[in-house]
Structures are given as structure tokens and as C-alpha cells.
Amino acid sequence: MNKVVETLKNRKSLRKYDERPISQEHLDIILDCLMRAPTAGNMMLYSVIMIEDEHKREILSQTCDNQPFIARAPLVLIFTADYQKWYDYYNAGNVEEYCSEENIPFTRPSEASLMLATCDALIAAQNAVIAGESLGIGSCYIGDIMEKYEEHKELLNLPEYVFPVAMLCMGYYPDNYNKKLRPRFKKDYVVFKDTYRRLNEDEIKDMFKSLDESYRAENIYNAKNYAQIHYARKTGAPFSREMARSVREALKVWDGK
Ligand SMILES: Cc1cc2nc3c(=O)[nH]c(=O)nc-3n(C[C@H](O)[C@H](O)[C@H](O)COP(=O)(O)O)c2cc1C
Image (tube, rainbow, N blue to C red; front, top):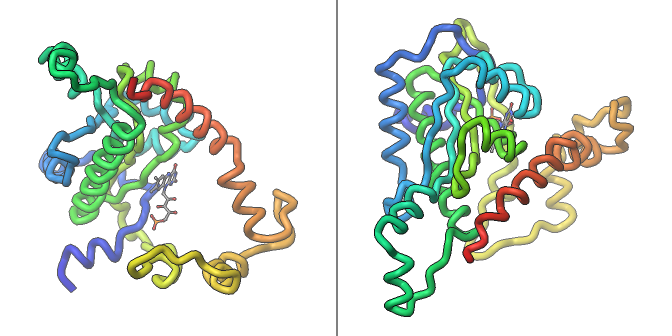
């Protein structure tokens, strides 16, 4: 197996890090690699905020659904979908005025702009993950950075067309770390040919079989099967509701008007 495939196939999320800081050489490699990621129209619709301030990390560990390991990560990177720089550039270039002269509709960034910028930001983030992994630096995404929009906006001084889509905690693997990969669904249920294929009842049953087998009748959710446990713990949990509220609030400015 070549080294890249080996790195990809052995990656897992790391939430416990060696205490030593990331070397400058490795940090530069990670940043250079993330900036080589594909980007829509080569616009680089993202910005990366490195959180060096310990107090801010502490705050983030609380605002991001109380995950203390965030505060202990040697490197914390926030990936923002960022249309602000291009919007400001268009304004500096009097694009609105030009549009009215040329009868071209001028619109502010829209939901589509946010989705495109989100793609850019996440692809860059994943380059950072793989570059890190290849250097013995593990990482963990934190999706909860999409929560508490108003607080994070203030904490990070975000202008209107910047939205934090992912946070990465990174650090060297601890000595003698026992790496265990988490299982994935079967390929047949994830990769389709030529068209989407809605899975039938038997296939859904088979897809979730091992999760269903992990169900224990005595559980704190009073759940009668694994689907109920999962919903209570993730999709229907307070953090998910907060994420929905927060994203809805953030979306208000991306109206394309
Ligand atoms: C968008 C996204 C958000 C995530 N958010 C969190 C998080 O807030 N906290 C956490 O511990 N792990 C988080 N993870 C890591 C996932 O839990 C992890 O990728 C998944 O369980 C599969 O495990 P693996 O990465 O070790 O294979 C996130 C991953 C992604 C891709």
C-alpha cells in the first residue's frame, strides 16, 4: 500500500493528545497543505482562525457542547466559510454600480454562496487532517462550532459573511496509543451506480444490524431500540436543536438580496 492510502485507511479521530506543542515545521506543512486544497473557482472562500489564546480555547470547550479536550488540544483551527473578502473586493471595485450600468442583477451572498464556501472550508480542513495524520498528528472535528452563532461571532469578531463551519483539534498521538478504527457501513449502502437507490426495509435492517445489536434494554433514554437511543443522544438532543437554531439565525444574512 502506498503511504497516502495507508494514511487515509488508518485515520481515526483523536481526542487525547501528547502535550508537546506542534513544531513550527509541522504547522507550516499543515497550513501549506490545506491551502493547496481544491477551491471553487480558485476563490479560496474560507479563512482559518488559529486559536492560540488559552482563555478562548476554554470558552470554546464550553460553548461547543462542553467538550473539555478542546481546551487541551495543542492546535485548534476554526474553518470558516468566508465570502466577506470577495464581497469587500467587489465593493471596492464598484461592482454594484457596474451592474446597474450593465443591467446585471447585483446580489449579496446567498445560501448557495454559503454552501459553496462551506465546501471550500471543509475540503481545506480535510487536507489539514490528512497532512497532520501523515506527520503523526491526530485530529478531531468539532461540529458544535456551528452552535451559539451570536457568541462565536462576538468571540471571533466575525463579520456578516463569515460562518464557522468546522473546528479541528489537533495534536501528536500520545506514546503507546492503542489505535482502534471505528467501523463503517457496508460499501453497497453508501456507493450507488448511475442513480440514487433508496434502500428497502431489509437493506435498512442489514445496514444498521451491528448498531441494533449494540442496543441494551437498560439505558438512560428509556429507549426501546437503538434508533431511539441514537435519536435521543444525537439528532434530537439539545445540542442539535441549538445547532439548528444557530444556523437558522446565521442564514438570515445570506439571503442573496
Ligand atoms: C462534521 C463533523 C463534526 C464532528 N463533531 C465532533 C464533535 O463535536 N466532537 C467529537 O468528539 N467528535 C466529532 N466528530 C468526530 C466524529 O465523531 C468521528 O469522525 C466519527 O465518530 C467517526 O470516527 P472516526 O473519525 O474515528 O473514524 C465530528 C466529525 C465530523 C466529520
